[in-house]
Image 1 (spheres, rainbow, N blue to C red):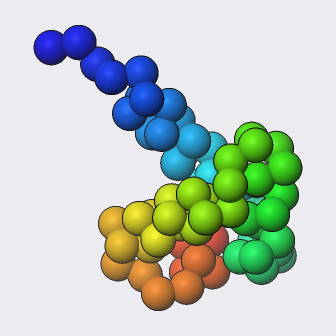
Image 2: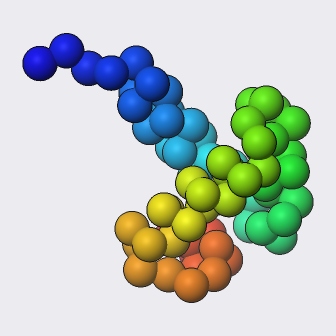
Amino acid sequence: MPSNPFVEQRKVMKMQLMKVVQENPEMDEQRIVALFSMKTGLKTETINGYLKEIKDAFGIEQISELKAK
């Protein structure tokens, strides 16, 4: 089955966002969202949605919990 390029792009962006979170444990969530938006051109609403999906997937409430993993 052929892959959907839009789905693949979202996967890449989510992985990049997780990397930014893990590499910047001192940054708060709002600043990470703003910087990732500037870097990628994604809307903050989209990034916040990605962060929610990441939190849900890892069963965490705060993004700081992911930084420790």
